[in-house]
Image (cartoon, rainbow, N blue to C red; front, top):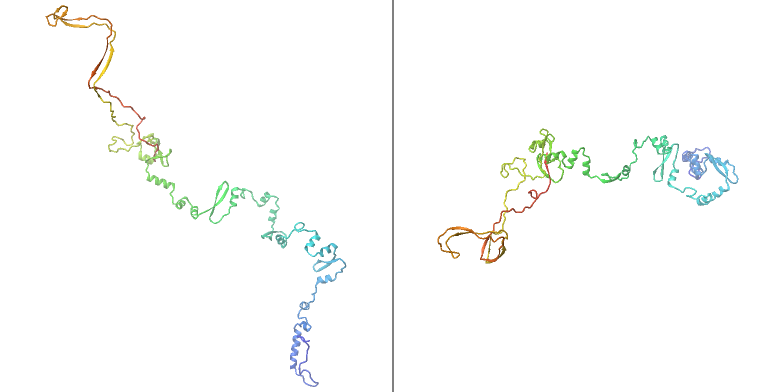
Length: 454
């Protein structure tokens, strides 16, 4: 049969007569076709398999390949209620198919099968879970443990002997022993402050600080703050802050305020670099700069190791006269007692003369009632006639005689005198004006602390 199908036909001129010559050329195509047919898979349409191998031929014609499993099945002896099953690779046997087995096999769907089995998902059996499905797909071996690589996705890792020794520890104490950890020695003991720090959410340029005991929060750390924090010394930090050190400030203060300067300070204690100007005896070496300025002007102290400060407590300070003449004779640093400058107070007394118009004075009174007395009467004898003294001198002698005494008696008198306008002279004796004030003469003032620079 031709390779390509149909039937063979002899080529023209290929049939000969006896004792005649046959040409080979007409047979060439035939010979080629036979050769190709012999060397090429014959198609099914030409009665072949279209394949060059047995398995290819079986596949082409749809034939079952030889199978040990099928051979094993073919050898089985079956009967009613039997079910073939494998006992080894490609090896089958027969087992009895029970009535229950048949009742399960003939269930139309999974729901019916679960009902036959008396299984409720989520009650009798585990409901489907992606995590469990992932675990089910793992290939395990000795010394393996499963772990998640994503949500509901598991993988297998080797569980070392050390890992097993840690996992089988009964409690944390045993686990720490296995790990060689002693709390407070190898690892940090629990601390609420560290726990607070662990709960913080940080980001770039943040710093932690406390808001209460063992309670931390996060604040922004500015670029300026970082330039300050990365300074390696206080000198560098002062440069960043553009400030002077204490010693530099003290030096500037000392250079701008010389030792011996006196100030009044609005506090009861002296500021740094100053002493109270209270007359105290202080060390000549400790306060050498001050001693070099004031020496023993305000006291020699103990005469060798100390000297006295000026005592300005309760004093008004007065500028030294220094040859001006306003307070002449003063020695520098000397004290001066209080004094009131001499002065007069003008007293305007009542007028020393009074005047009055015509008026009268009424008077009355009586004489003393005691003392009898006589009156001595001087006389000149001028002649006597008829019991009277003549007015004309008649010559005679002079002398005195006493009147008779009337004994103790009083005389009363009264009357009115009158006078025209006249003056009375009144002499007012010297007197002092009244005094007022306290125990000293002073202006209004405020009490501050006198201090001296040392």
